Length: 138
Image 1 (spheres, rainbow, N blue to C red):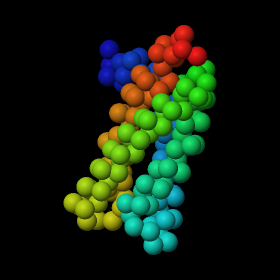
Image 2 (tube, rainbow, N blue to C red; image 1 turned 90 degrees about the vertical axis):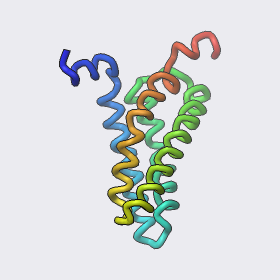
Image 3 (cartoon, rainbow, N blue to C red; image 1 turned 60 degrees about the vertical axis):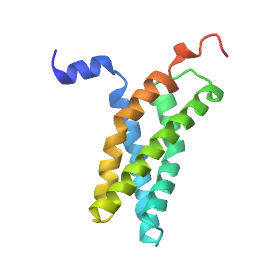
Image 4 (cartoon, rainbow, N blue to C red; image 1 turned 180 degrees about the horizontal axis):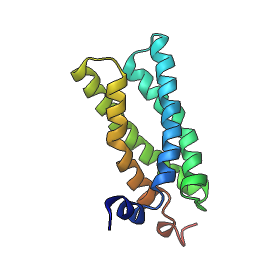
């Protein structure tokens, strides 16, 4: 089996996850850019941008990516926990790279985003929107 086909077979939600996450990431980056341009520190700007993308991403992942039937009272706390993990990974990667590369904010943010994307997908698929874990506990 070819690698791409095998990946899509194992992770059928991945294309929609990337599309939804990409839209949320663009929201994150545009917010970050506006805040950096207005004078906010780069680390605070990326943290704020990530928070702005959080709500849009949750709604997209719940409805579009995973077509979840989980009630928000179950899915949203899980999502917040996974988002916190992703946020901390993003912030740590960005801060380290921003300091180490000393080349502005674009390259560090690109690398940080790419490094946590697949981890976020696995957590969303296996934990956040996994309805099997919730059956019988509504």
